[in-house]
Image (tube, rainbow, N blue to C red):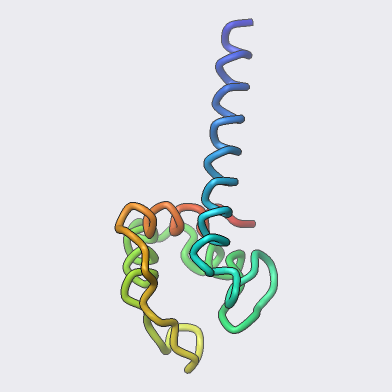
Length: 100
């Protein structure tokens, strides 16, 4: 029974972290150009997660892209540098990689 309770707490905690990161993406304006499962101005989060799945440095790489911006990986429309802290960039990157 104790193990079941701990497992439930872990699942609720992970779900809360995922929701918090989605809220952060909304708060920071990420959803203006990206959607979970559909291309907008930029690629969908699901497509990003699929492309970088299994890449050991994916969180650091994506956090850097979020902070500094970039162009050419997904086409010629540039993604400007985002006004986020290092911690927020990592949180967003981890969330993006979790999107299915």
